[in-house]
Length: 511
Ligand code: ADP
Image (tube, rainbow, N blue to C red; front, side, top):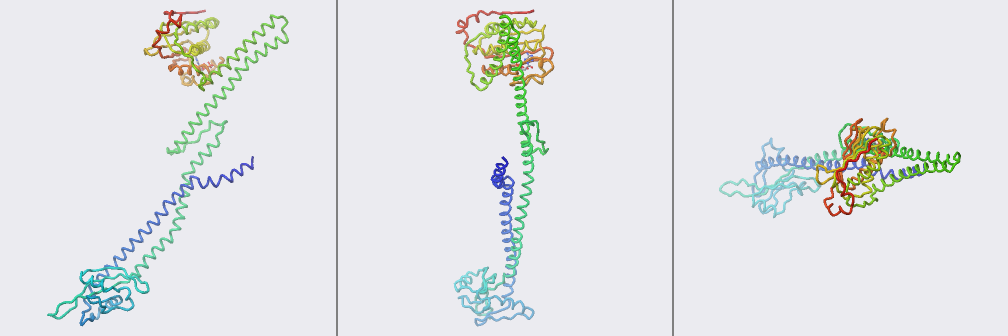
């Protein structure tokens, strides 16, 4: 057993761990945050680069405007003539520059950065004829990036000669900008694994926090066994979905507990019910075996034993019937009946027990209470109600059976009313439950299995009827059953014989 548990644990754990809610929550956290962090990094790198290059472009434009002032073109050669204080500016300008004529012939340039400012003759002609200002990003031979501005300038001819167009391109190195951007990017992406690790850790902790109550609920649920079903998982007071789950779970265990309790009580009751006649039978047989001498004594012992055997088999029969009824195996044999006639017959059977118990048993039957029903089951229903009324009514009390029309023309009414012990209102909702018995000093003296009313309720349901109970403790109980009226009864009056002969009858048996 121990080995099995270990093997089971070893094989199950990793799978459960990988598929565990905590891991999945953490992974979804990571899958959400990692792309988000990378996206944010890429986005801000782009923004930073655009901003820094924008600043370079503004500076380049200023340089361009100034550059035009520092040189003139004479005999196809640029002549630089800056003021002495501008010498530095011009020196910087001449780091990256190209001057060409309108046909694309180069007039002057810096050999070091030539690659960055090399424009084809075609490009130059296009820029000059269209007089457009062109910004582009180009690279020197050593791979240094430059922002280049290219456009048209005029020479400074002495009148009356015409002004001539020339091509000028100047540039600013983007190496510093690029270095700044890559420094920031590197730092960000260097920190990214740390951030991802932190997000994994955070995800793990957050998911753990979310899962912990689920685990504790699972733990509490595991502690619940058949013998401590009354255990309830404490609510967390958060009023969230988990609390709702706990509530539902607690309700479920409470219901299970109730069923377990009923079954436990039922086993006790059944064994008690079976033991009493069994002990009696044993006693009768012992008498017959050891003390009886005459045939009459033998006979008496046998008759008594037989009565108890009959009682035993009726208990077993009741159990069997109920389980058949509830599992749908009991088929109803319906025919058209006069409920009043059936009631009279059953009441008749109870006359002798009523007399013995000194109970007044009355029947008030109105004619024409036709129903389409299974006669045996209706008799059983009446017998159960009447035997309860007799059981729970002390001597000197009264029981009355009434059959007649109800307020609704679609139903006929059957009432069984007694002046017995009554049923406390707390117990009323449960009396039709299987094996349910009212526990009180009074009712504990009375034997029963708590099956009679379950059967009554099943019969009423099987006939599409309704059942109502009104009871006052110490005063009595009234069961009222409504069964659908058989409207097509006229055809059947002949077949049911004496039913049609029942006029308003009052039957009374009193001690
Ligand atoms: P039981 O075999 O215990 O009579 P039932 O299912 O017939 O089982 O009835 C269930 C319980 O309802 C009884 O135990 C009893 O406490 C209560 N009860 C039923 N009928 C009456 C009644 N006429 N008066 C008082 N209590 C009743």
